[in-house]
Length: 199
Image (tube, rainbow, N blue to C red; front, side, top):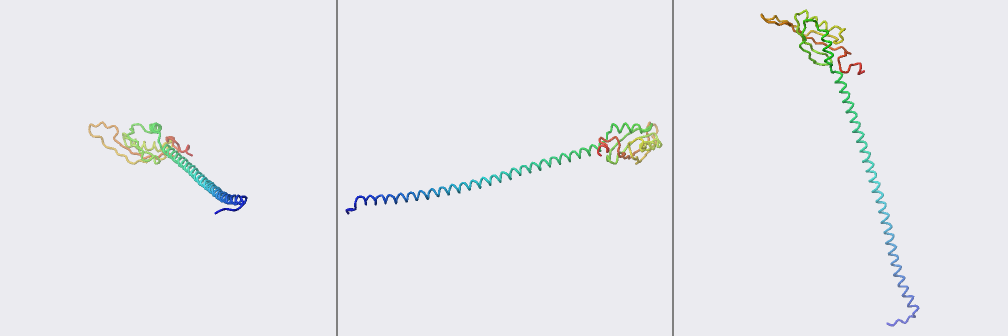
């Protein structure tokens, strides 16, 4: 087929076809660019949301650590406080035996041999066992221990007194045995920490 169109018209058709192709290419490029911009926007939004989520989780974790540390410190303080109270309580009930024995030595009458000193309960006092030459000396020991001037015991009660006749040829010097249960005075000076200090 012979194209008899003038050369100018042929050129115009040629450029028209080329312009149409270029428009399509530009349109496709524009659509691709818009899609890329949308993709970037979605990516930025997603990154911001992820960052905020991680930031929130980090803050919660940090607060949790702070709370745990605070709870741990509070528990440690409570434990130390309880241990300190227990130590004071134990020490307040500890008897200074060296001082107590010195004072007891002053209160024991002549012809008496102290044979035992046992603590049943620090708050209630002690059980004192002694051997004496006779019944009268045993009761004198109880009177001496109950004397308020000694500042040891608030009261001293006789639990038992037993006197045995010495066997023939026996050289028992102390035939009588007395057991006395004595209660400490309230503010006695023979405790490691006195009640006055606790107040």
